[in-house]
Image 1: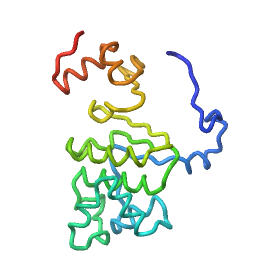
Image 2: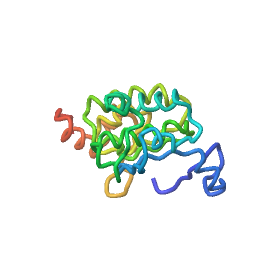
Image 3: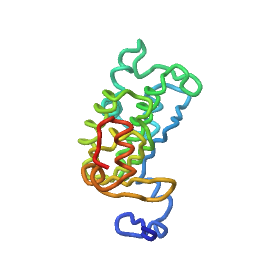
Length: 191
């Protein structure tokens, strides 16, 4: 594949007003950024007029509500510079909550659960499935379990697209995907 186009609401992306495009997108990078302030303020940064209920709902979907609630100050817990008082996985979940509260049309998650365990990631994925109905979700991941049930998986190798399809299709037709699956999951695949 050497050509194509990206469209947003049927319009070529280069024709969409950048401000309008940014309003439609929420992005969660692998390397999280938290701001000095409270947990609530960090989540609310995604939507300034968010209600307390919306903040809690976003935190629940992101798998952050339990550890926030377990803190003596809860949502009023102060975040140290760069989030030093939170683990990598907790910071990722707070960043996911901040993106979710925006209710974007396009959600981009760039390896945003790489610092959480597989069980926590599965809970987040279940929450996202319900939340993501009707929105476009781009999930960039290195861990196959992160994308195994995606509608469409694009496999890249050295900057080139080497496979597109669902998990089962790629498992039977894409050598790179088979090798990644075998190395991560450990099950023998017919190569």
